[in-house]
Length: 497
Image (cartoon, rainbow, N blue to C red):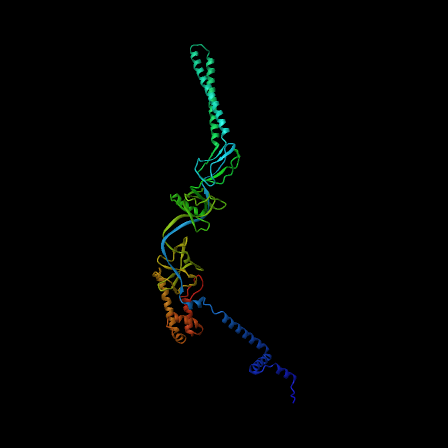
């Protein structure tokens, strides 16, 4: 028995999968072919929905930002107490270790180097013999000069005896006056020769002394530059060794010209300004000394003034030509309001700190800062000693936020300026009461277990803010704008009002 079908129906039956799924799929394709433009929109929307579902399944919601802080409750922070203490006014500079004396020991006579009486790096005193030049030629010259002096001395003695004899004969009119005058001139001439001979002896003695080369200063010897057997001359440029004075040691450094007024005011007042030097990393203190001299002019090319500080350097920690970091203590300010530098935050309105209240909330306070001394900074206005400020975690806070202080060991005192804080607290309490009244029905419906005014209620309202009634939503917006929201802190994060 043969059944006749149209060719199109045969192929359509071949392509249609059997069963309900196949019939549904066939209906979807049939609808898509009849509505091509609408079907594209529907398929695109389904693709976006599947993609969003996939992202939600792979990447769970991160607990960050406002929603994250609400789920975490109070923000853990580190705090510090504002104290009254001393602040050091210092000037930081880069300096160079410069010896007070560096002598290149050079020969002053010509000859052969026969001895070296030092070892490299040896500490020597002023006048110690460092080397010796062959002294024999100079000893011979000295002996010759002494012989000439002895001969001329005898000649002078004989001339003086003759002069006395001639003077006696002149008194008896036995000789002429001219002969006495001639003998007197001979005595004076011989005396002049004797003076020249004495000078020759002294010169030869000095040159003989120069054959023993001595240290001109006390210090440490460097590496010797000449060896035994070398011929040295008095005019040569290179020396035998360099001796550097190490105790005391000086450091030369420069400071800006606008700081010289403070320094000179203290120096003219008779104060001794302490100076500390640190290594290149500015973490390890090398030694301490005092300011010894201030230059008389400002360098016009750099706008700086050169200063010198002296150090005992008994332990030889300062090495010549070493670069060091210098801290000059200009003055010490007593009884100043001091906080750690990390407590200072910077925003669009200037510098501020977060002050912690006994209720474990924070108030944002604008402060005016002064001199920074290491990890501490001077506060000129805004807070007072006894206040508690946030030093860790401030970037996640905002004015009025609740905080948690792990391992709290001290009681938090009422902050200074409590009148303004009390006014802010009263204003927040008034807004909270208005919120409780406007949202009482919403709380019963959405948050049946939460109590009015509690943190649980505020978190519940925030999470269901799209389902709130008109009055509750209005009160909630006013609370967020004028309540504990305030200005943001350093990080821009916050919590629900």
